[in-house]
Image (cartoon, rainbow, N blue to C red; front, top):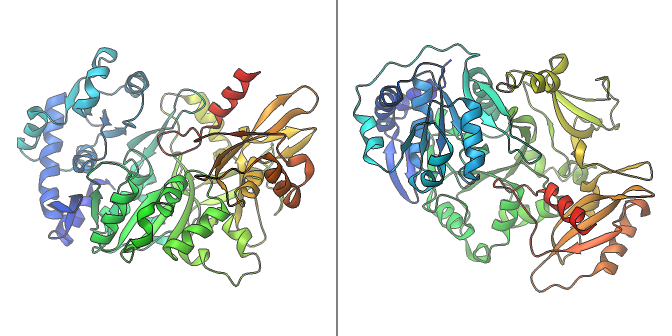
Length: 505
């Protein structure tokens, strides 16, 4: 099934419903969008002399045209390569070259620095040449195979060159159906507000909303501003979001939240990084039972395990807090295991690598057979994440395998230490990493961001740790920062924290 049919079906069934909005203003209905996309598809084919299967990059901030471009590319049987608009131009140029992009649609503000670095032809979104693409005669929708490539999803590349996860039409349709089964229901009266990048999770979760004729809302700022977000919630009914945990934290602690009308808020799906129990309880206290968690990767687009809204409020369960600290249960059509180094499944409670398989798992990495073979060995996606199952099927993530600290021969999982430190009322954010140590192999270092005006020190944090975790797990050093380094998706960059320690010697 061609993903373009999601839009064309919505245009027939819910043609008069808002499809694309900016701020508080409706730009296009589904019927209008359904008429424009086949013309845009033909215009792109003619402008780039493109053929089916060609890769076309999108280097754009969030905007309504983003959605028309995605569906136009699929309509024509081509492959979308959404690129994070906040990347350095040299990083973008590398992705364009690696993907073999035949064309790139680029925001004018991003084009000047990119032009000298790439041979890929560029079409500037704000120039007349782009508007003229809609004047082409409509072309018929391409007949694609389920395993044809649809979306080339480049990983964030925090530990080296990003890899292009090959997502097929089958993968993305499976992710859409899985959303309805395990995350949330969607109606044509709902909307999803894209404060997070469409090039990443917010775009992937926009697809089930298109399929049900729900409104795609782009903030006027094009990004995440807590005050603007609260205004949009007050305006649009049935609001859903995909947020990184840091965005949930910022929204909950925004000054405007005290007087905000959040009655229209339906669901915040959070993922992409650890959501600590203290932060989660705080968010539910402020926002109500509106949160759902997903654990996934670009290689299995947002779909490995999850915890729906009902699971979040099951306070009568004896292990309620442990469940809140978990990543939920295996999604309906995904098989998940925890295994040892030989891929042998481990008993509940034992820690190992998380692997999964199902229709949602990528076809492999673009032009990287070695990495594909390693990651997909034995028919399973090896996530590189470490965790364990409990007897009820809840998966608890410990950390990325590369983030685990080994001190004196003992394994220390940074998240366990971070959860404890965040219990202190004067701690706003924390990240724990390992530092090389001549005698112990590694020692634990905690980077701490204090809440505004707070003066909590090492002694208080040390006492907190000694009250909750084994002595060998407590940080040997505390470093106080004004902010933690994060990537464009809100993930804390532990690599940069390690570099900071290396420079200090």
